[in-house]
Amino acid sequence: MKPSPFSLHLPESLAEALDLLASSDNARVIAGGQSLMPMLNLRLAAPDDVIDLNGISELAGLREEGNDIVIGAMTRQRDIEFSPMVAERLPLLKEAILNVGHRQTRNRGTVGGSLCHLDPSAEQPAVAVAMDVRLSLRSVRGERTVSMRDFAVDLMTSCLEPDEVLAAVRFTPWPARAGHAFVEYGRRHGDFAIVSAAALVLLDAGGAVERCSLTLGGVASVPFRVEAAERVLQGSRPTEAVVREACSQAAKCEAISDPAYPAWYRQRLAQRLLERTVAKALERAAVQS
Ligand code: FAD
Image 1 (cartoon, helix red, strand yellow):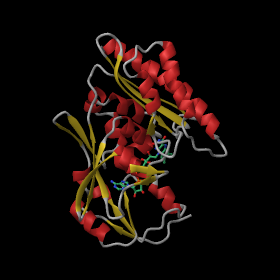
Image 2 (image 1 turned 90 degrees about the vertical axis):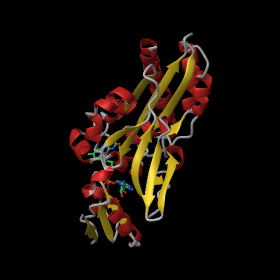
Image 3 (image 1 turned 45 degrees about the vertical axis):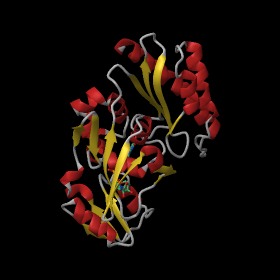
């Protein structure tokens, strides 16, 4: 199929893009097009105006700001994959990005596009929840910053207003001695994950869990922190039994069902994947501590 007719706009600055967005009643911005193009072709989206962000250089790139790393929304997934800064300071994002589609899609796909598209199985939103990133949303009305928890509202639904653009994503790296792991299960490499798990763990001098972040993707309509599991692990010595007890909480989480993968399957897969992910993160934390 082909898209329904639309006017294409090629702004060269964010201000120009925001003015265009504010002046249209039915506009969509396009980034890498890896999700929006199929939606346009299938007429799952039928905007009157498509505003192309690819000519706006101020939206791309990574920079350090104090202890934080700020990633522009138009940064390609491939740039994340090859960034020494990400490899060193955001190893969870680096490990996750290698699971995103294929290198061809990562050449075009952007960090902002994945976060705004909010596929429940997408890796980048799961990492964004795991690291509690903050998102800078811009419009002609100004700028607002929201946490990823507040940004991801429901299935493929963010809190973006129709006239807003995601401009940048702010990550606060965990200490270098933290352990990280991102594990997913999909039918074939490059497919969207059925379920994914992300873990960050810090151990104290005595080997007990000082801080942890455990996230599941592909289970509910948006990625979420498994807080019940985190509470079991927090402060404990992470023996096998404690990790098993913590990860058993994953099987109790609310899960989406579809004809291919019912909720019970996702819950059971989530428990197993989380066990594997936490074990890997603990192993790395023990080495790094
Ligand atoms: P686009 O497709 O251009 O836009 C996506 C949506 O976000 C649109 O609604 C658009 O309006 C909106 N948007 C984009 N940027 C902004 C912004 N800055 N502000 C406001 N709204 C914005 N993804 C995965 O996570 N895991 C996978 O395994 C995976 N496999 C794939 C396999 C194939 C074959 C393909 C084609 C895609 C796959 N993807 C996968 C999707 C891919 O990662 C896309 O990059 C991503 O979903 C969207 O990024 P994009 O830059 O292409 O956004």
